[in-house]
Length: 281
Image (cartoon, rainbow, N blue to C red):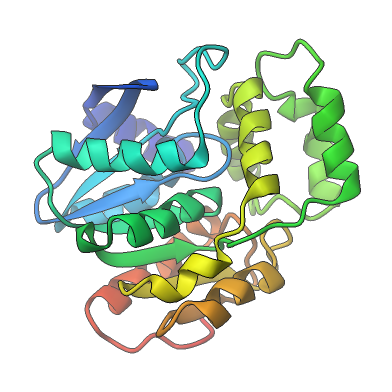
């Protein structure tokens, strides 16, 4: 069912490209209504969020895009910083003639969304966050892996080799074999050098000082079994961002936008409509 849904989504979308200082930015533009931007997480592409894109495209103009490090790009050319990812989003909105938009950021994409809401405050109509962080203290083990992997000649993330380790650690959130295959496909599409660069960004990132400046109406949703971005990570955002609303999806992990998609999308829709959202769903 999931793969049938995904194939239908792919058949119905039209991909377009924007030339930026960091290369071609790939995006889709679906639906009509208030603009709604989808920023994907650390790995994969905006396709990973096709259920959210389809849900909101029913009455919004939804833009899903791949920020720098697209699977079809050569990551070896040029250098860029985390702030360049934020500016690229502003360039995309300019290109599409969009002044303000609802900004949805998932996981690492949430850090882009947070910085956008601070740097381009007048362009963020609402801020929707999925299990994100303002800082992330990478373990010594992961730091050593970054150092070691930086020297290896991989082109793509060797996800299949590490999938068993990830699952044993509870880092995957698949409920069916089909969801597992779909997740593998998304992870494996990420250029290896891209992953390393993004991990370097995470290692050096500290957005806590800017959180009190954000004035956009903000909602954060996460799973209660998430071990990738934990409750401690989310709590830093909740405790430091004034007026933020939040909810927890019970019995779900980091991939709740797939495994609990109906509850996930409905909670965000209720928030945007100004309706109360239960603290636990």
